[in-house]
Amino acid sequence: MARKKKHDYFQSYCELAKLAVQESDYLIESLKTFTTAAEMGDVIERVHELENAGDLINHELYSAVAVDFMPPIDREDVVELASALDNVLDYIEDVIDHMYMYDIHVIPPDALRFADIIKKSCEALDRAMVEFHNFKRSKEFKRFIVEINTYEEEADVLNRDVMRHLHTVENDEVMHVLVWSRIYERMEKCCDACEHAADIMSTILLKNV
Image 1 (cartoon, rainbow, N blue to C red):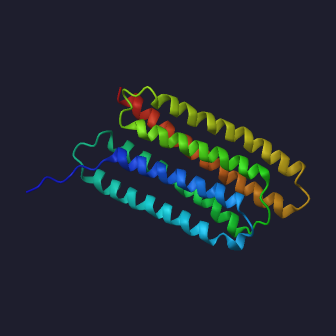
Image 2: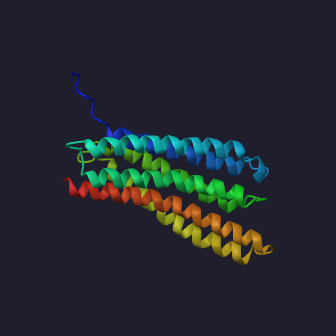
């Protein structure tokens, strides 16, 4: 009887990170090409398909680790990292969904600045994942982790600045302030989620040196 092929967890992580990069691309596209919230259906559908693809990857990963006699890292770490990557996908989708649900009418320049940091965070996460299978020897892995943390710090500073600008300059319409306050909070969560995934990888490195 043929031996069942062992699940490649690191490949699954790479696939999830690449989905996050794709979602961040769609987020920027939706901001740059915005006309009306009612016309966001296409990008919402594409992002939802990516999020569903991530769910399928995680379902296979969870099924594999449940019966795997000896996963490459602790079983709890396998699951925690997969969940963290799923959160990145969920949070980016959440930003786009709320742009539609709140029926936004304009795109503030600060939103594009935030989306750019989200994309850079996802790209750094993707690069870290490529090296993750070799985290004990890779010279680049730690640098990418630091890069993700740096982007999260930039997002914190940007969130403070855009919130102040929103409440002191763009404050003519109460609903505009309310809506974009909530969207910016969700944008910051995307960067926080990338950092959380990076922190889990750092912990895995420390536990396995």
